Amino acid sequence: MPLAVTEQELQQLLSESEFIKMYGFELYSFEEGKCTIKIPFRREFERPGGVVNGPVYMAAADLAIWFALITGIGRQEGDMTVTNELNTAFLGGGRTDILCKAEILKFGRRLIYGTAECLDQQGKRLTHHTATYIRPVSYN
Image (cartoon, rainbow, N blue to C red; front, side):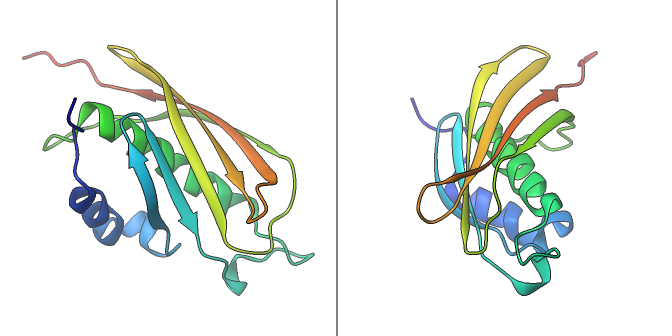
C-alpha cells in the first residue's frame, strides 16, 4: 500500500514549520506508521552536566510521532490533528547526535496512539515517550 505522504512533503514540513526549525531536526527514515528523526547535537541543547536538555527530546518525540501519523493518514489542508497528551520518561543523558524512533500503535477514528524512544549512537535508550493525538470531529 502506498504511503499517504512523500519524503518531499515531510522535508517541506521540516523546513517550513517555524516551531521545529530551531532544533535542526533531520528526517532519517520513515515507512507507514513509523518515522525516525535525527537530533544533531548542539551546544545550545546542553543543560548543566553537558547532556541534552529534556525539551529537545520531547520536541523530537512529538515530531517523530506526528510524522509517523502523517505517513498513515496523510495531511489535508486545515488538518487540526494535534497532540492531546505526551508522556516522557528520561532514562539517560545524551552527549552526541541522537535518533528518535516513533511508531503508531493504533490509528483510531478520533484518537491515534503512538510511542517513541530516543537512542544515542550506541543504541542506548535515553527516553521513552507515549502520545495520544486527537482528530477533530468533522461536521460536514
